Image (tube, rainbow, N blue to C red; front, side, top):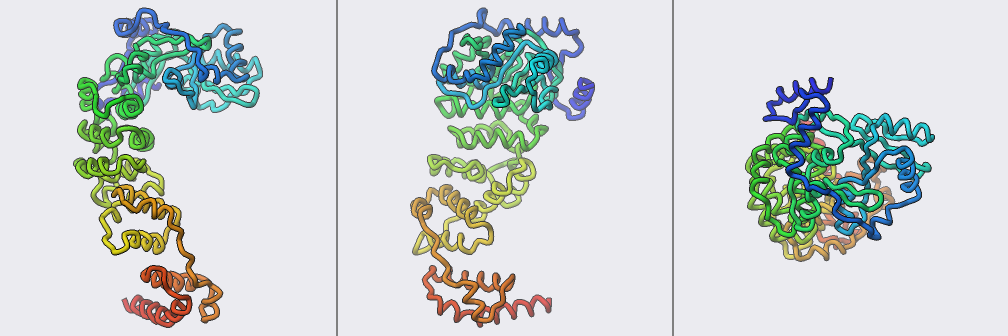
Length: 464
């Protein structure tokens, strides 16, 4: 049984506490949660009717068919969470999630009766059914639920028909609103006021919400960046709850952490939010050093924050060594490009004095043994890191054509294959070191010296 597994895991991991009302029967659970939720909720959750162009644009023929179906079967259907928040901000949401009083079994029976195909049946264990209407549009529809027991990552749920209780289990007030298909906005926990005031706060008690899913710590910072008007206007009680529960992030998967952290790093106030995250004692639980380079972060953010830094570029300010990069990658499961970008920044962020300021970076690109498009992107990030005054010039620079071809080398007796590639690389290094200003005949004249150098290198390797 999931409950037993969760509680056992909870004790094994030493997590401080978890939401746990499993000892109550189903009716007692609902009554208990309502007693907790009602003092914090508004008496009448209906706050307005929405009739904006963004809202109207959502009503495709497929959505109209879905609404008619739920109405015919007597199940209430509302839009939920982030889509409602975005619509109230005047934005058309990218995705729309729906909530309903119908249980998964009731939805499956309804869709089967109406010969509507359902996809992604893995969502059913979370209470989500995904019908595909007219073989054209998918809709994720989740049954209202309460959390019976949680361990900071997983939850056993109980289905309900109480919209207030479903709203009460959500993370932030701005994400806890519902929107009826007729445009009625239901706001149980004053999320609309918080949205208007650019305030980010948890539904109910912050510590309780965080301990239900520790990833909510990072979600708080992500939405702060999206909604707040000032970079550092956090409420002290919220930060205290975050500090007191930071270690819970140690049990969250690296992939989930990186998904949230990346959005923070690419959003508003990224540098300031990362400083606050570190001050809350979170660094060591998300793959960063225990004592990261906060001063370097502040310096780079002040100097280069306006340049739309890659998330990894800003995160690299907190790393001092390649070992730090390796540990970060192990924790967060970065992509190969992200991992190698971090290595590249650590190796190349120091100034490269030269009479021609761009030359060291041009040489770096042309001597690179990795894909040139990737290396070029990495160099751009290093230049952004340092707010390099010739960044745009580098971005517009066209790589000169290397004048030596395989045909010319064959004429000089160099056979095709791996060895020819080695010779070309040596010639290219000679060309790059001389600022790309070497005639083809001069390059070909270097072949005997290169062959002698490669032969000597091979002899030395044999001796050792």
